[in-house]
Length: 435
Ligand code: PLP
Image (cartoon, rainbow, N blue to C red):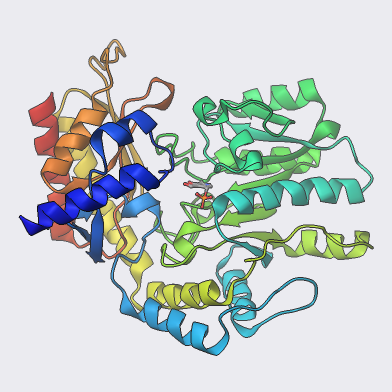
């Protein structure tokens, strides 16, 4: 009774005052918030009406170590007491940002060694896009400004990042940033595009190691090796957007480790703090760093007030310590195997599953009415399956962009075998009920 009252009061205020991200205004006004979460522990979230659900997507594929880790709060408080904020502009610095930049360099593949910090993934992508254009300007190759991105990619919602996003719905705004080109995921298409446009007009190619919001799409195994060779051949910088895949999600420290490829620039966010504080960044190679030092006489006019926020850096350091000390990436490998096996089991059982995709604790199920003839349901059914799963206590995501009908899951790294089995059995039950 009192829980319901508390919910109603808050729901009214939510509708009145809170402008939700990526939401239908009409739906928000008609339905109000589905959940008003109040606490989290491990893989579980609890809401104001007392319902507990499994956070099957680690919230926004970001709460990787799981909810409720007090150590991160303590690290934040300690830092705030000691030095809540100080600027990193120009030659100012502070201890935590230096420690974190060193830590990221140690973890990152190849010679990726120097980090520019932001508050999230979109800002980090914008930073990368400006950096590559700045670089080519310094080199005197001013025509090299186009950025090639893949269809079904997601890179964020700032002007640059939404322009780079290969899901047209995110680009349905007038006058986004110019000079972005979209390709399908075949090397031949990319080669053709480069030939048509001229390599001397192309600054960079950007890709997620495994596309997330576009439906969880791992590339063919040799894709990035070919991309790396193609970029080298044409003097094109390669940006890997590791916002979802970075810091363990795929069972390796970075997504690119799975493909033995080192990009020139790596974009990071989400998992660096497991969502306990907003932080992102761009990591550049030693080679690029040295060239920038050599070529540049002026100031790189780019920096956010919160570039290298001390509290966020302290939280990131503690989060990365936990991932290492508790061997959470090993758990992603082990539980990832169980999780992917579970998807295969679902596919054997349910005729409507046309495909399962994934790596580590990142996975998706594709649904079709008839997989032999590749016929879709008239209305996507994944939305209903996800709703039904919620009734059984599992939060996931349905992806219906570009005619897809996909269920996506990415549970926290601390999940155990029994909990993986629960996740799979809820998906199973929900599909049986809906279809
Ligand atoms: N890049 C990728 C691959 C993402 O998945 C996201 C967010 O989901 C972003 C960039 C944008 O990050 P943010 O929402 O922190 O700006």
